[in-house]
Length: 334
Ligand code: 2RA
Image 1 (cartoon, protein in one colour):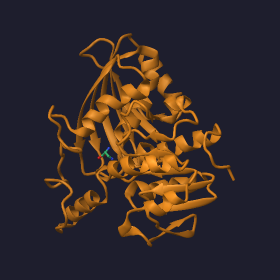
Image 2 (cartoon, rainbow, N blue to C red):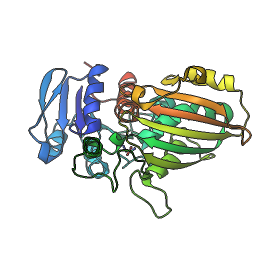
Image 3 (cartoon, rainbow, N blue to C red):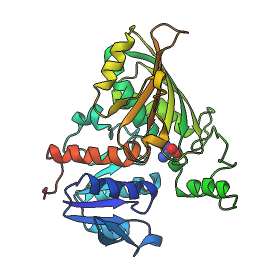
Image 4 (cartoon, rainbow, N blue to C red):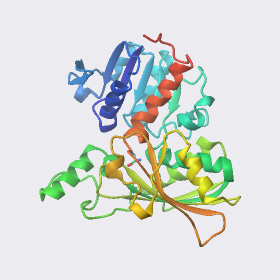
């Protein structure tokens, strides 16, 4: 199968290549695609050098699959052009996520909705993916009414410039700033841009995307997204109120039986998820599970995942794997 990775030189693009190799995704020909300024660069894949080509050159190759992580503007302009060439696009940007004609997919939850007609498929936001992986089974069992989530997001979610700023600050050196303030030894309640309603775009993604993925507008989500000086993954403090009451033991059992979710929860042994240990793993880790004593039918949890893997690259590749498994992709599997 001819596969293009668009945005291959970015942080998520690099993880996409790593995960494609790790999972031995069936690729007969790989196109590594980036902007004009990166044309001609060499990227390694499975020990072989690959030369970066431009979007114009890649679309002319009409790959069977294109996995995008190149920003919303590039996706809006180029995903339709690849689709017209017969390519199935899995896009990691926010460009298509809330388009009613485009499916927003976490494979463990709603991959079954995909058909061969879906030529552009949206990968949800990283902080959404880890949240819904845990909420989906609980919603099915107890029906959510309201979710309050506070995120503690890795600097890697902003990109390489932000990671460099944090490293420079730790080394005491100056450099280009990705944020309006220092990030080291700080916490910035500012992920993405502010909107007229006082929320940030990141917080509104958390408010809207879970309802689309779960196919249910009967519950609401409110969020505060905070950037913290870590790089291993995103953490989320989550409070959920359900229509029905629950048994804590049953909640733990339900989550521990959910594919892709790992319960790490034992205060007696200081066992709880942390981004440093979630880094480079594909599972979503949940702990600090406890009844909210302030409100009936309510639960508190702490959810952690690697935002570049399950939060982006791995989820997108799992969508592609589902398409292959159901023979929904044009190209022959080698
Ligand atoms: C962030 N979720 O972490 C956004 C985009 N990756 O900044």
